[in-house]
Structures are given as C-alpha cells and as structure tokens.
Image 1 (spheres, one colour):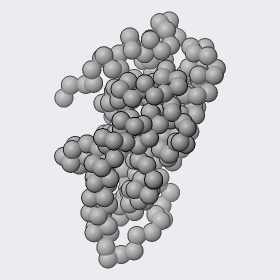
Image 2: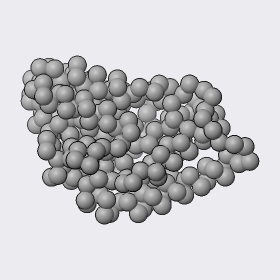
Image 3: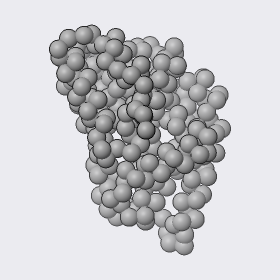
Length: 230
C-alpha cells in the first residue's frame, strides 16, 4: 500500500507554516515519526493527509488558516488508545514543538484547536474550530464501504478491549455525535456531509445495540477511554 502523497505531508508543506530551519526539519521529522507508529490503524499518516487536504478545502472560512493547518498536523500527534488524554498531551506536544518556530499567539490558538478535537463541538462563532472539526469528522460522511473500513480500523486500534467493552464505549461516542444539533459547522460541509454522516452513524449504532442486546448497555467498568470519533 502506498503512503500519503508528499504534496500533503511533505516538508515543503510544513515549511510554508513554520519556515525552513534545522529546528523545523527536526520537528517535522518527529511529527511524521509519531504519526507513523505501528499501533495506528486509522489515526495514521493517511488520516493526517486527509485532514490536511480537507482543511485546505474548507479554510476559506477560517480566521487563521495557518493555525488550523498546524492544529491538523498536531491534533492526533499523540495517540495511545489506552489513555484518555490524547488531545491534552497532543496540545502540549504542539506547544513544545512549535516554540520558537511561530508566534506565541498562534501557538496558543493551535493548542486550543487541538483540545477542541476531544469533543468536536466548537461554538457557533468559532470559525477556526469549525474548519478543523469538520475536516476531522469528514470520514463519517464517506460511502458506506469507506465508513465500514474506518470503523474496522478504529476497532483494531482498540484491540486491547473486549468486544463488550468496545461496544459500550463506541455506543457512547455515536450517541454523543448524533445528539449534537450540528455535526458540521462550515456551510459546505454541513450541506454535503450531514445526511450521509448521520445515516452512517445511525446504522453503526443500530448494529452495535443489537450486538449488545439483551444485556444492558451502561458505562464501561474499565478505565479505558471510549473509542475515538475521528
């Protein structure tokens, strides 16, 4: 299987945001290495490339497109399915990695945006957050076969959980997403992706509820975080 196109994750794209320097090259290599960890089945370089490409399509509505793109680079830079603070640690990693490469105000915005991906629920006036969250959740609106592949990859990342534990956690994630008044906040994404995403989510939720029956589905008794949304 070929990797993601260099036009999306190559150093030249990175350097447009942070410049070309030894520090910049070292940080880009470290970020790429993090996204290439072997335990990643969905949250990998292909996902990073997809989010970066979609951000480029949607960021005409952003107030700081460069910050949104940098947040995309870092939004899952730390991803360990056994922990529940990946977004917080990723935001901290962004702050440390970008220090001295971009202004402090932009670093603060990148941190905020990375943290926002924990819930994918930006405020109505958060145009930067809308772009990043919509790009991250675009996978939910894919064709049914692509959605199945995504859901299967997420399950593989949570292979340490039993089927019962995974089902409980995943149901909680799907219910939370479907309860949101708006899955997508940018006009283009809302128009094109809302209906297929809700259909995919509802179908998966129905199947998981059938799998969970006849037992009650409640909060997981384990310490593992719920399976990721995007």
